[in-house]
Image (cartoon, rainbow, N blue to C red; front, side, top):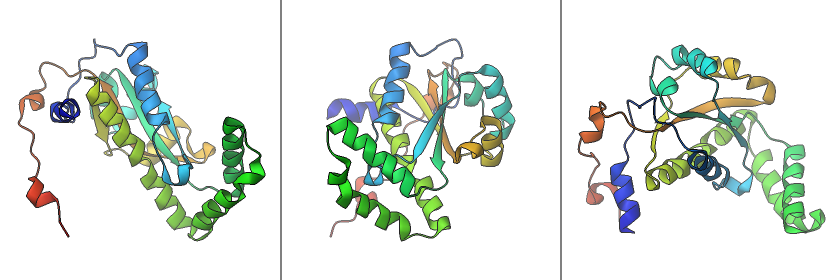
Length: 210
């Protein structure tokens, strides 16, 4: 308990990265697995994660990110994209995946499929897209915590033009849209933000007891 609280106190939204310090392959795999293993509503995982490793592509994303330097300076950049919509075919593929993984007959999951379809069909297309967009913040939180526990710096960023990101990364044709991104790497010694005392409302101000 003490260790994780210490890690959460240690982490901050890193403003400046040391471009010479790179994640090891094991550290990169850890972040990717934290994203992949994240929970999601109904387990549907209606997202994909873009690992932007090409330096030229990252330079193209910089102006669309309003010049935020972590986009190009951090060791790795992940863009979390949600599906614009999901339908029965997607749910069927999800059920087949569960059945194959657990050695089940897919028809034993009919009740589960019904619950998923009820959730989806009860929403307008706009409501469904909004619901799916919110989902990506779950893996974002999981990955930020996993990074902190392993002394890896990370910066969550919403400050970018989603339309430009979708175009540069070719997401629209995949039925996806960029929602939030996360730079990952190691802080620069010159980043003064790391020395600032963490500012959070107190427990009594933040929690309501009933």
